[in-house]
Image (cartoon, rainbow, N blue to C red; front, side):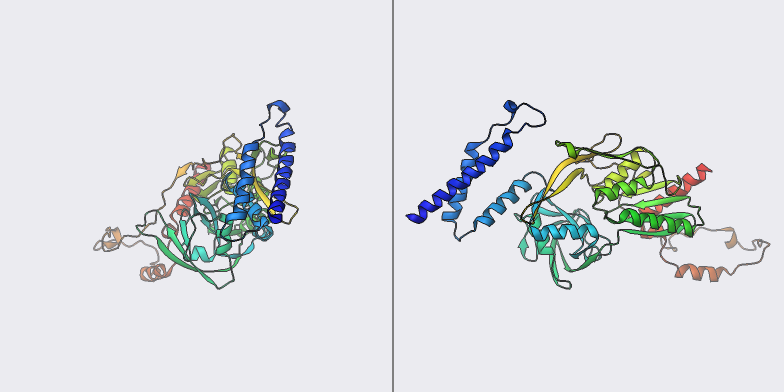
Length: 439
């Protein structure tokens, strides 16, 4: 009897504190509205919450701590808002901070929740997930033998992380496949180099950004400087590859956009609270001196990638090529809590310079490209007759070339660009066309 009375007393105190806090929140004015216009405190709902809390404590098959129940209640409260708001316990908060610096343990995939399943936003370059063949849009329905339906995103991510070398079996549903795929991946330390670059052809550069980290802006500047150096300062065009880039740090997206713009708005945000409204403008410099640009995107390009693509598209600075992007146009603010944890809360939406909302819309490419892979025709199937094949043809009049030697070298060359990466080949072709017209 004493135990029951103590329990009832503790529940009464808890409800009293809860009501006190909520009363103070609702008493404040909402966005300048009069106090009389604020929402009425749902006492009945709070009473129901306390009743259910009590029933779980008394009747659940196993004892459950108050801490776990309250923590799960907070998780549910946040996860019910949108796919990106979440409660992060201290360990998860630390992992999030590690992810923005470019080194963490796991498989190397950016994921979100969709209809209770884990959806792959994109695999990260040079990671176990990418090497195993995980693709953007894949739905993960099982982790080892455990169904993900009903699992929180935080719990799923925790399961996918682990000791380097340990393995996990993913059951994946993929569009176009008749049956689920079983993919085994060995975990590894994920070290993400966010910027890579190379010369495609003389005077034409390529920069790949795989994610937006705190140091991405500086890495991009170094890459562009090296490309200009390799081309004697004469860079006629650049392909910026943002395919399967899941996003990352907002400031990094602003720095990348600013590297190619001399003026104007890059992105702005709007939310309910005053400090959620921000505007970012370009400084007067263009690191490639106005050279033509093609930006490659696909369905795995999300968040910060869409900010860059949208800014360069609206400012008429680049041609956007590829597939429609993912459509994550919301801002998440990390709010640390007193217990060492944090709340990741959606506080605003992104808008491109022209006022387009990215949220659930994505960026439409200027030139749409289907996801294709080219295959060469067998020479035996089609071999056009040339002048050199005709009997008694005239010689060129210049010193002859060892055709057989050239052909032999060609066979040893790497696979041509159009066979390896059709979208990149199309981007380079368009860049050459723009360069010719600009002459």
